[in-house]
Amino acid sequence: MTIATSIDDACAALDAHPGSLVLAGGTDLMVEVNRGTRSIDHVVAVDRIPELRGWSRDGDHGQVLRIGAGTTCADLAEPTIASLVPALAQAARTVGSPQIRNAATLGGNLATASPAGDTLPVLAALDAEVELRSVDGTRRLSLDEFVVGVKANALVPGELIVAIRVPVLDGPQEFLKVGTRNAMVIAVTSLALVVDQPGRTVRVALGSVAPVPVRAVEAEVLAAEQLDFDGLTAPDTDLVDRFADLVADAARPIDDHRSSAAYRRHAVGVLARRALARAFSGRDPEGGTA
Amino acid sequence: MTTTSPDGAFTLIVNGTLRPVVDAHPGESLLFVLRERLGLAGSKNACEEGECGSCTVRLDGETVCSCLVLAGAAAGRDVVTIEGLTMEAGVSAEPGLSPVQQAFLDAGAVQCGFCTPGLLMAIDALLDAESDPDDLTVREAISGNLCRCTGYGRILDAVDRAAAVRRAEVTP
Image 1 (cartoon, each protein chain N blue to C red):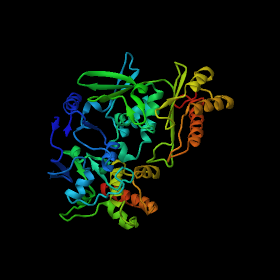
Image 2: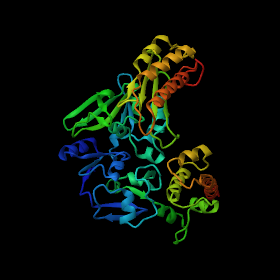
Image 3: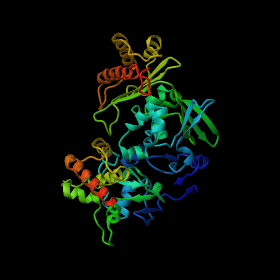
Image 4: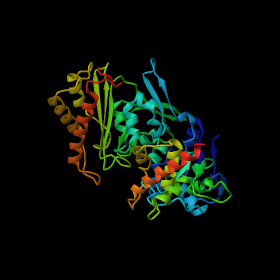
């Protein structure tokens, strides 16, 4: 086992020991190890690398937030993230339990690439970029380049997720999740909605309704054409209905042990309606009246 | 400093004591090593997937499911188990019950007892962070601990009692 304390050391260890498992919070990996469905040879533990924790503003005007891949869900729920990327903080807060959130990391949620990964719809809605590092250098992938299928990602051997880059947008954001209880639940379906007021766009992404997070592109087009981005005034019922229908149409759900396809499609429409109503309620995100 | 070592040999720091482990198999969880190699059977093993919270320990102060911690990866980090909660409480050399443990007894919050160690660890951590948590905060703090006897009412009562005792202890 290698317990790495720097990104360079971790990449060197991954290079020196092909087939190594990267261990961050362990909350997904150890479930497989305990079940005996994942064998362990060499492990590279990356949970003691200070460079992987925390976040910084990047870009010409600080409009990009670069979040270290080892940042825990508990840390993502803190006020700083909640003020800069509210939907990401909301999603992180719905992950597992306090014990899980203390260990589970943003990079781990990405690496697992579960269709039900709670942060993934948020990252999809934000057009997040994933920063990868290996001894050969750094590359950046868009989220849809990175998450390529059910529990499948684009990491090549020797590569480590080091950061996630998301834009800091001006406008309300929502993350909503349906499950059988409010804690310790894997999403039956989830939805992230982010508003870019200056850009006059709404971006919507859905979780647990397809192999990978899906954007509701037609709903986004309708929203961009019809909504009041200056005052965020509540849209009329007809517009809300059409928006919710287009979101539901974007879903490609399946029947499984957790839910039926029909329920998922219905639920994601309800979430769309709810998220739109919260974001466009005539109030600005600071809580005053626009 | 980055260290590379054989998987089976490492030293844990458990309840303030160095505990060498010499022959662990690859992939052994912290929970397994605590129970089966170090004789600390207070942390309970039920789901082995982070759902039940029965194996909750403090790792560098944070509550985690010890079943989801690779034992070797915890080397050198500060592990506190339910046994540590007991010892910590004693003002004399004799192990004593912590306020949370005593409150569970007083409130009758223990039925089969299997979830109790994990709940005690979660609640002790909560009360370290917040001396007078409201009901919603308590419910969220124990949302990762399942009681299959469903004795939550008395558990919530025990949290109130423990919080009151702890507040009285720090008030001169």
